[in-house]
Length: 256
Image 1 (cartoon, rainbow, N blue to C red):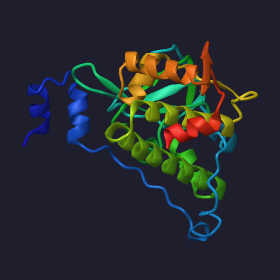
Image 2: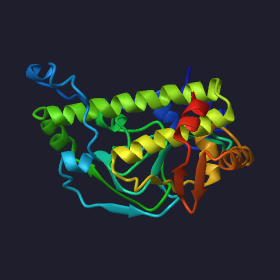
Image 3: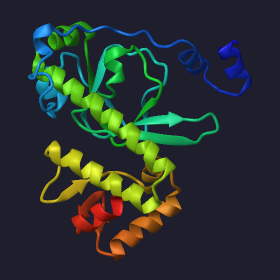
Image 4: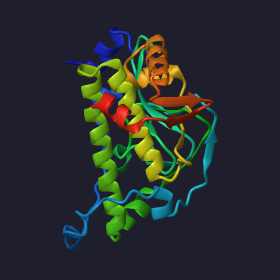
């Protein structure tokens, strides 16, 4: 079966996208010394921003909000990392519909997939203005071979992306609208606080209702209604891109 030809007949506009499906991206191997396969490696994964763990040697690039940073199937020249701003991993359908798979915050790898493969099967879009750079693969490979802390960071990032995928599947399959949005807010709170990006309980969340809708599989109208209900019941305060969780225990019960 010629998958590329079939995809073209079915209306997919990007020939490169069909090739990305038909031909799995080349994988890249990294070796970890046996001495690191121990309790040291399997201890608590590091949550430090990647630029603090390993120096970025390439110049930074800046992109405007709502711009595409990487397209599905693009060959990556290194392993990208976001230095400042918010981005999103996005799956785009041929009819224009989209699903935000997860958000990329300052200090995150664009995706752990980029460590092991030369291309991504999703798009990466800027939510805000974004500054990003990339690790040269030989530099990253050498560093992973000698730094248990870096390996723990990579393991932690892989586990986090796996958990995000599991939660997204459960959200779309079983959770109600208010549960999905409550879990999204709590998830972002944890990530922002871990990175020291929350100030006195104020969480900078520069998301439009359309982006929240794309992340939760809802319509913007539904998102607006749920957020309005959360405000009126005293669970959250949200204005000018700042989220404050006013009743944490109630929001946690709603998300459960």
